[in-house]
Length: 102
Image (cartoon, rainbow, N blue to C red):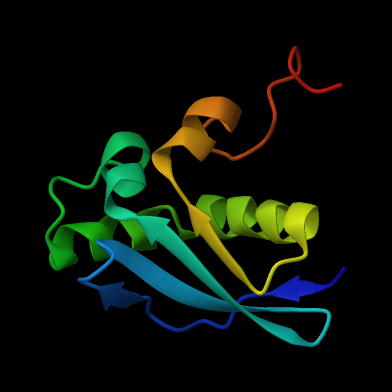
């Protein structure tokens, strides 16, 4: 599946305490999100403030988009949210550890 991410800044969703960012998968629009908790726990965001979340997202955009792409491929969903638990399970790169991948 061809998954692309436009080079646009993420949107801060204060109600969800998350940053959202778009993707296109096989011609379908997908809303992606990463929680403030995930950005703090795994990508160095200093706080859940918008500026801190954006800085962490920009610094780690490639890893975040890569993890989102894997989740889109796995679920085929039109909306995915990356939580801290996803990165605890698969690591900050979002890839399954070699000893867990089967």
